[in-house]
Image 1 (cartoon, rainbow over the protein chains, first blue to last red):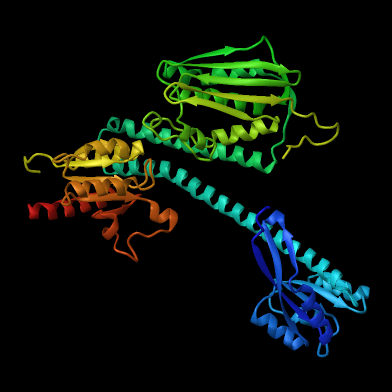
Image 2: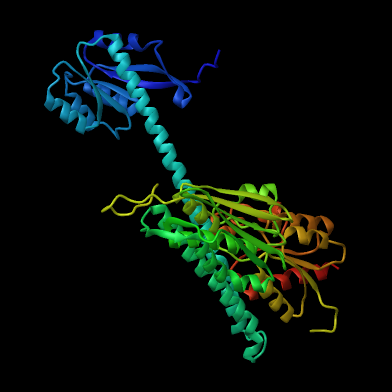
Length: 391
Length: 136
């Protein structure tokens, strides 16, 4: 037998001037429960009752219920008046009325009524309506929780971003102070390394800002795609040229293994982001005198494989697990001098997703890493429509 | 400066530029800097007679690297002054030095916030080392 779901009580307030209605509703809900397996809970009900509008308002003020069963016609006011006078309506209202006029329905709905029950109703009808209300309450709660989580992620992102922007500022500021104090004497040449380092840190900051813009554009779906036939082999050649100076400085041999041509329907800019990202990482996180191999393969018509393998510093299991987090940069004795925004792989993953693919990584600490992207042709938008990003 | 042997200061900082600056500055103040760029590299340097004061970054490979190092230094010799440099307060809103006495649990002698002015670091070191010498 499966475990029974944990029981949760919802507070129901029944407002009706007929004593029979109040006890009837109480009895109908006594011992009644709604299993909500999607939310991993069972809901039962506690019932409070009020006979007049005044009593109802007092009960609402004493404790906000989850659900209010509200008669339209009360001795001292209408149900609509109760809703209007109620404190913050954080409850779900079910209007009970014998005169189900359109006008009442519209006004009540405007005031936030969730559903209607026409008098007279059976206990089954009441239970069905209450079940629907309970489900709705849980859906709302879940939505709110997701919203809250999203806010939290955003907050963390901004906190880390602020830190990443502050570090280069602090570094440059520090050098400025030392220069202002003429700490190395009056000769300008004495400050060359400080100026060089400041330039490097500012360039890093610029790269971070550019990457951030790329990422934001990708996430918002605002980036226009220019889809055309792109030869991956040609694109790889260009990306290799761009990384050549960096590779030479570290004595790294970069090799391309590819068929003569590999055309794909794609956005040339996006293809460049992917190839450059892979090559730059393969060089940056490599050892002096190491090598990197970029392989391009046709998998099937309309799909391709890009694999970039390096003989670099590699990653431990733990590092691999954290790899795709934003602003994650592997901090160890090998990576100390390597700069980067920490957003490259986040961007790569998002772009690869546009091609219905994924990024697979294998790595061995001290031996090297291999990144594999599987891509499909970008979908050709129907003639006349804007090219749009898929979510 | 007198012709006394230079005072050795252990500086642990993971930002290479901050390290560079600290080194330039402290050396210009006639201190000798023993540099380590993270907790792991600093730990074996904590040896009797290795240094007379320490300046530690708080967050390095672990978010509490500075505290851990401070604890180890104080265990070796409680008289060695330890200055922790951090920007945690500004970023997280956690104040180490308002409601509670930080020295009770952090075991550092001074906490300096990043964006530190070098004069502030100099003043702290002077104060702490001066106090240490008078005990000796």
